[in-house]
Image 1 (spheres, helix red, strand yellow):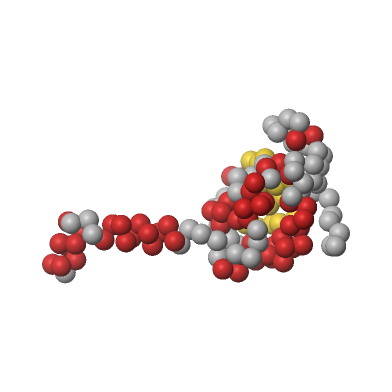
Image 2 (image 1 turned 135 degrees about the vertical axis):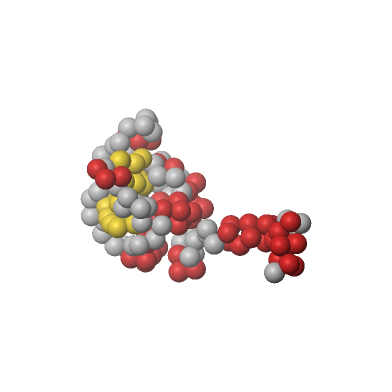
Length: 136
């Protein structure tokens, strides 16, 4: 116990603890096959890159249920738009096709989008589309 107390006093354990915590905030292995970087680089789907990733998104969609918000943000990035609902629930919107949001990114457009509902405690409870998407 005395050694442990000594280590804390010398701040040797803090960098190790910090690295452990940072490592635990990533994307789970089961979701790593998804091309997050391409998805995130196409904000509002104005370059139409997200449409090409929909088949891959369908493969991981069911695995998102119950995951925390930080996993979602690590995977898909900041939402293009969001809506706050009663009871601190939220819906995150990620566009998957070009639309009016490309002209005015503050406007919620009629373009198709993924809609992800988060509970008040920040867990994913629903994943769906504004309009149905047909598999390729």
